[in-house]
Image (tube, rainbow, N blue to C red):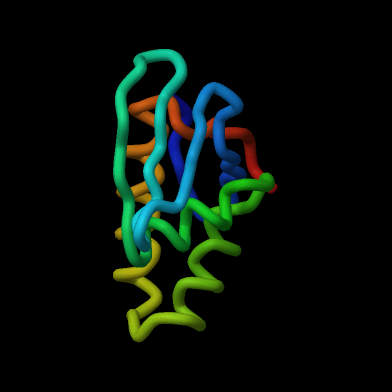
Length: 96
């Protein structure tokens, strides 16, 4: 998996289905037939990756909508995206 950095572009994989269920976003990987649930900030990030978007743009949005320091935001967003990538729920592309 390529490194996820501020200039990295990510997008939701086409091999998944997502749906909002009582305030939580539920994802189904079509490759593994496993379900994943994300809520709150994770659900907001998931909404942002529906179109190709850079990690720095995701962080800009999260920082403007939530009370979080830039360094912590970037670290948490990268960690979350790495988890999504590990489960093949997003595609990691080159720099913006």
